[in-house]
Image 1 (tube, rainbow, N blue to C red):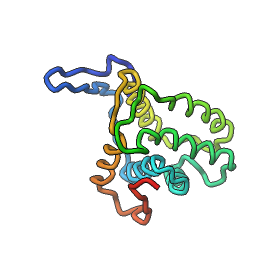
Image 2: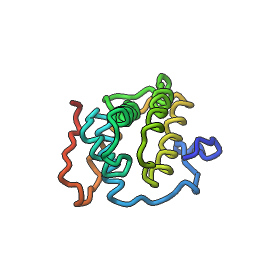
Image 3: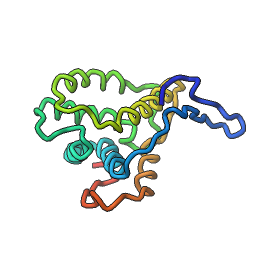
Image 4: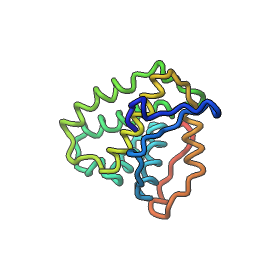
Length: 170
């Protein structure tokens, strides 16, 4: 979501922060969600092969990219996967994720052969907003545990069922 603080509402009764950015709500195709979740786990596990496979399936890559582009793309995925890589709370107060991704972004802009899939513009806006909010409030979040809970409870569709991703660290 938009990291605009007026889009969040604190509920004292439940001690929860709620998102109220109704303009950010949208649906995503099932296959996109399936493959995106697989890619997030692959990024957390630093599994280059699965990151590349899912990136091609999702439309981030064409299959004709230079090694420079592939390396920047994979490294950006690994950087964003850092909060989800290890058990225990991830301390967003000490992160330099935005700077690291920004540094890789110049390479990706120069070498990219295709724009990212349409779905990621709204999704990445939401995710970056969540990251920025966590950084702003100094949150410590058990990201890996939350990712594994979502992954283990998620009902994947039949397409792509042949993809095998470990939910343990390599």
